[in-house]
Image 1 (tube, helix red, strand yellow):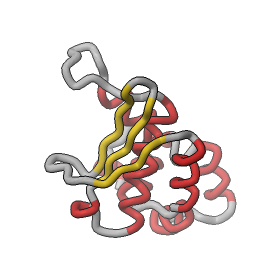
Image 2 (spheres, rainbow, N blue to C red):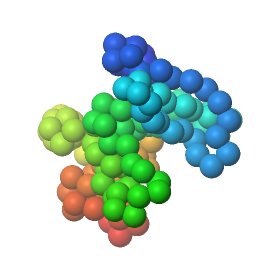
Image 3 (tube, helix red, strand yellow):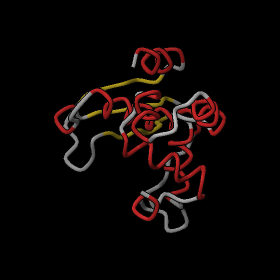
Image 4 (cartoon, rainbow, N blue to C red):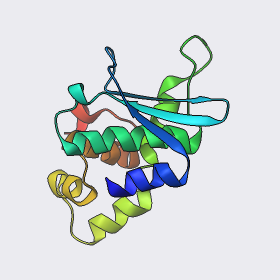
Amino acid sequence: MKTLFGYADKNNIQIEYGRLPENKSISFSITDEDYVIIDYSLLFNQKEEGVHLAHELGHCATGSFYNLYSPLDIRMKHEIRADKHLISEEDLDAAITNGYTEIWSLAEYFDVTEDFMKKVVCWYTYGNLDTELYF
C-alpha cells in the first residue's frame, strides 16, 4: 500500500475519501490533474482497498478514462488497461516460475484479493475475464 501511495504522490495524483453511493472507488482527470476517490465505507479489508487503489491509479497512469455518455467508448477496454497496470504478464510469469502456482498463493504474493487474481490469470491465459468459466 505504501508503494501505491508513493506512486500517487510522485505522479501528483490526488487521493481523496468520500461517499460514493454507486461505486467503491472512481478516478478522473480534470484539466491535466488526476484524482482518485475511495469510499472506505464500502471496502471490507486492506487487500480490497489496495486492489481498488491500484486499479484507479492504473486509469490515471494509462489515461484510460472512459466517457459514460459516449456510445463509441468501450468501457471494458479501459478497465482491462487499468487492471493490467497493477500486475504485468512478466511479473505473473516470474511469480509462477518462483513456485506461486495457486490462486491463493499468487494473491498473497501480489497482495491482492483472490477474485482479482483470478481475473489477472484469466486475462493473460485465455484473453478474457470470464472467471466463472475457468475457476
